[in-house]
Length: 561
Image 1 (cartoon, rainbow, N blue to C red):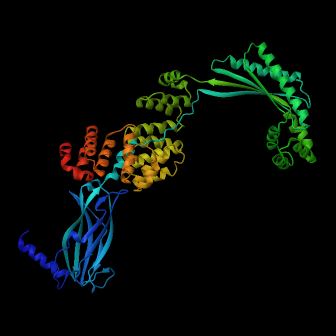
Image 2 (image 1 turned 60 degrees about the vertical axis):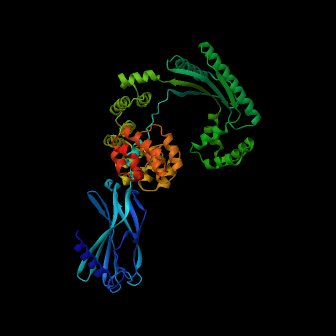
């Protein structure tokens, strides 16, 4: 631009902004402050508060000035929210600025973040209208931008811990076999028909002992007396029933040549059994009987009060009390499942020979992702209605960075059962894809998922709530947790977290470099970026445009090229 043209423009500016003033300088960056001084992406947006000043005897009384924030970068720009001001003689609804006194103002603007903004500058553009004339004043640069460290979430969330769907496999399953030997009122002798019950029980013991994957632990004999009668009588009666039943069981075991431990005990008055039977019955005044049990703990008092309820005592004596005159035989044994080697071999060669829980368990016996995938795919074919294999396939795909496959598998899982872990995992995929609303919706339905709190921490980063994110992560040692701590300026905790990441990757080292830049540790910046680039060369371009490293540009020239 030649000197004559520049002079002409200055004359126009003077004419527009003031009729007579000794202060005819153009507005410069000295008249503006911006918070933050260097713009920063927060929750997917770039907010800025601009504080400006029109000097004394500067604003023409008949002019209208529109201030427009524009964030510019090489090849593009984004326009913010404008603010309009008017001179004292202008009729309108905009804020009036005094010619004599000038005026201060504050305006807020927000830009939707774009990756290109990482290396950008914030300008204010001024449009002046006076009557039917309109003029553009020179734009003023007021800030640099944009610190985009929060946007690293899309890189760090990939290492977040998803929630695995667990199998219910039990190698040893506790089982019981029970029989009741019944007695006549106030008697302890075992009748012939009840001896048959003991004999059948003994046959069951023999069968289980002879089964390959069964292991007998012991037999329990529990003898009881019904709670009618005196405590002294019932104690003697229950003890005698215990002795007689124990002798019979041991004699039968000896004849069958079974060496099985027998443990015996007795309960003088079976009030627990009485209560259970009454609760399950439809007898008259049931609630009154149960109230007596809750009011009195003394056995004799209970017996007395219940007998006073004459309307139902005959029913109790006929339908309830006889069932309590018994000895219960309980066989405790284990069902022993297949060994790990058997399960692994069958999962590979004959998966149909396994039930669902065994097949899901088989996947836990290998550390190879490809082998896990093969097993889970077999599970989806053999047991297509169960969601767990689909969820775990989605988890493996996510860990491999295949978001499309992860989303597909998790949708398959959710179509079968929208379990908490499925919703939790869908949320992490949504965050990795930049869909914060979908992630929030999924996490609202993920209560009970094992890694829910960690997922909420990732969501809090995406929403720009860094203190909440730090609280949600707690002591979790992941890249995302470290990112939250860096953004919350808890640098000591971030250093501890980065040191504790189980499987550090390129992003772990990149975050270490960012932490070094924020704590003025040049060696940490250099070493962190070197390691990050060695693991992922695509980070070179990112680092070149990252304002976090602006003051280390010279030192990093050899690394970044």
